[in-house]
Length: 333
Image (cartoon, rainbow, N blue to C red; front, side):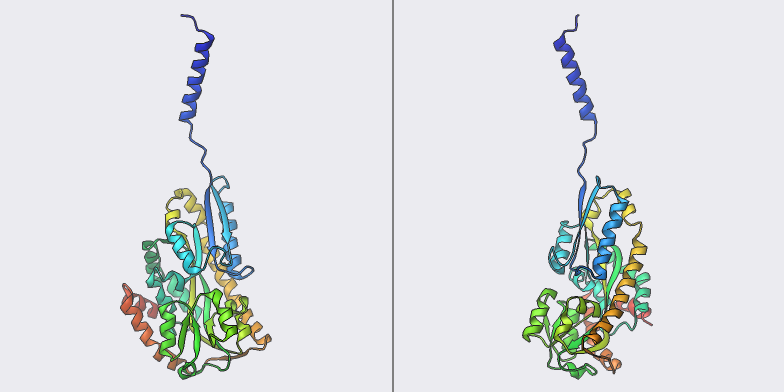
């Protein structure tokens, strides 16, 4: 039987189709968004940008397309947490207070007057407490990348230092939207006004609130300090932050890619802490240079005694709360 030109064309077409069907499809790179409310040019922003660079080095661009969004470009912290849970983001950097709305176990880190210095917290996060919190995060949809921090929070007001719990009585204080923060102010006799960070400058300038508490670095970077005259170095709440993978996205990444992305995590964690702590020291100097009156808080024991009601509330409201507090106290010795 002779092979006609038509038959030869049909054979070639059939062969090409077989080859194409057997070849793997060329997949588009996965889009990986990293989001934070960190103001540009701050240590937190630099940390996020470093992570972006490291991921780009570790994973070829044709496999993963990484982009960071800073300054709340994709929403406030609660928005980022919810978008992360839904799988709309690859990674977020938020305060422990924000993610504790979903993972209440993390509230143990922000209990008022629990920690005296950063070394205690470093020890806690590297030990049994940190391990327990890592498990709690993953159960709720987050995979820990690194611990970061805002640092210790301090009281800032228009007209007085805060050396005794009664000094807060009657003041209208901006509070982070977290029961740990609002309950603390209630215990000290202040009126807590919970509001997102972007609303604070307007509330301060209009007199809706008489003051706030936050880390020195954040207050200086956002210029909140312009609306207060007295800064009390109270170190009443240590506020860590977390940089976490959104589990729905993380679990879709190939195992080899996840290993590469975790490669520099330890170095990044240490660098992040160092930058923030250095930044907080510089921010204290900048507060003084700007004319803010600064004093270290007195009578710390009186505040710690009043704060015990918040510790008790945490234990009541939190799964395994008693054990988590026990682990924290052991690290804080």
